[in-house]
Amino acid sequence: MPENHAHSSSRTTTPLVEMHNAGVFRAGRWLVRGVDLSVRRGEIVTLIGPNGSGKSTTAKTAIGVIRPDEGHVHRAPRLRVGYVPQKVALDWTLPLSVARLMTLTGPAEPAAMRAALEAAGVAHLADRQVQGLSGGEFQRALLARALLREPDLLVLDEPVQGVDFTGEVALYELIRDIRDRTGCGILMISHDLHIVMADTDTVICLNGHVCCRGEPQSVMGSPEYRKLFGARAAEALALYRHHHDHTHLADGRVQHADGSITEHCHAEDGHHHHSHDAVTGEPDAR
Amino acid sequence: MLDDFFIRALLAGVGLALVTGPLGCFVVWRRMAYFGDTMAHSALLGVALALVLEINLMIGVFLVAALASLALLVLERRGALSTDALLGILSHSTLALGLVMVAFMTWVRVDLMGFLFGDILAVSRLDIAIVYGGGAAVLALLVLLWRPLLAATVNADIARAEGLNPERSRLIFMLLMAAVIAIAMKIVGILLITALLIIPAATARRFANGPEMMAVLAGAIGAASVVAGLGGSLRFDTPSGPSIVVAALALFVLSLVRLPLPRHGETAPPTEERS
Image (cartoon, rainbow over all chains, first blue to last red; front, side, top):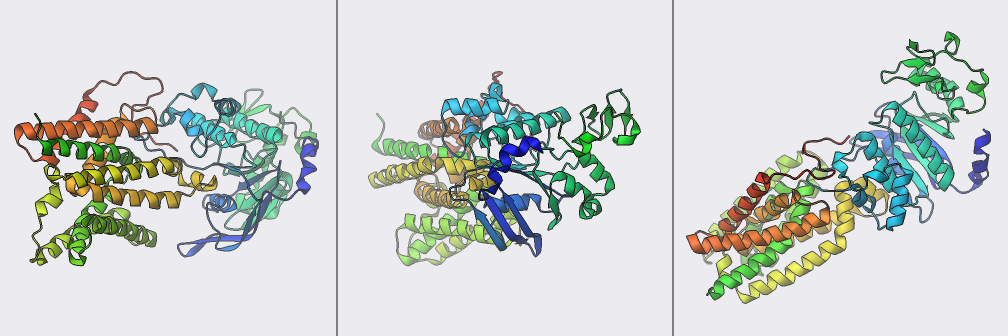
């Protein structure tokens, strides 16, 4: 992957966070067990898996929100973490503007705050109350807040939830830009198997334990992945690496460039107008 | 001319309201109203124990209220009963225990009504000194603790992930609550303390754009309630503690009646869910 050459040199550096055989035991059962993972500077690691497979638990354990009941978690000294949790349920009784949300866990210069809000595309919302934002606006505000800390490690738990498809693509592009610009490591959780970012360096597939891992392409082809999600999911994963001559509709169907709609897109259904090099070679999604 | 006891009552009541307002905001934000009530009810048990052990009443109240909140934390962690049920058990059993113990103590004359509903007209110069000294200490700690406490209120996981310590914040917050209950017992009584925590904060919500503004407004609204309530109590010869609470309620109702100005970015439905 040529576009990642800039990062591959830094891959040799020590990891920002490293988990060895980590497990979390709650209420008489293991939520997740035997997890090994590491995130380095400039690297995007994506956790995927079905509901209840321990994705959030794994991410929280990595950044010290949860202490592991077995195994080890090692974080780089003075690691700055920016965290966007899966759910932020804000009581209406707490008046909170987007600008005030920015300085929740630490002070910030007004200029830096503006820059972070602009980077996340929500500068125009600074004076709005958080409770009045749409799902996508709120996600971006939370992302801006995490960015403002200039984190070494950005942890995003389902960052595209409540965001429509076009917003989803834009948000993933934003996340990639953040990585490219700041060189931070990103640990991301997704339950949306149809769109695992093309820019993800490592996909870790969880189901109470690590099922399989690797680059998106190799994970997709692994028998464990197919067993867990089915062959159709494996095809869906490949889609994101195709030319964008089609649009994914909200119900999961696909609208092609010629206007026709299919259940999902097969390379052989004749709607795609690109060579198959795109599937296996260059990530030319842009 | 106002009588001397009335000025003392005003001073003590306003001093207390300036502390319960900001602290009460956190009680409202964290949905801990019933929790505050439970701690306050345990105060009577603190009084009874202090009388038995012959220690200062306020210290007894502070210790028992703090212990009640710790007991709740421990029981909550076990997860056998819901927090709601635990609060119901602790709240009423500590109050009943206190009443029973006081009844046993035939050798001391206990002004039960004074403890339950307060006796603000009987505050001494020492009481005023304690309200302002203790209140200043509580407010100073609250200011120091403001950022981690607010961050933990918005989302404990974010706070923990980004290097703050939400458990410690929560513990200190509960100790501050216990201290305020100990200070407030003589002024509004243990049955009405929670009202001074919650009603001014709820009134302030409508007029506040940020958490800091809401805290300051809650203090001011609480102070206004004390002045209005004591004034009414003097004029209509009504019990002073309940009169203060009635005044606070009147201000809250007024804040609801006021037509909300169309403000930029303000949201109307309080039930809106964030997912």
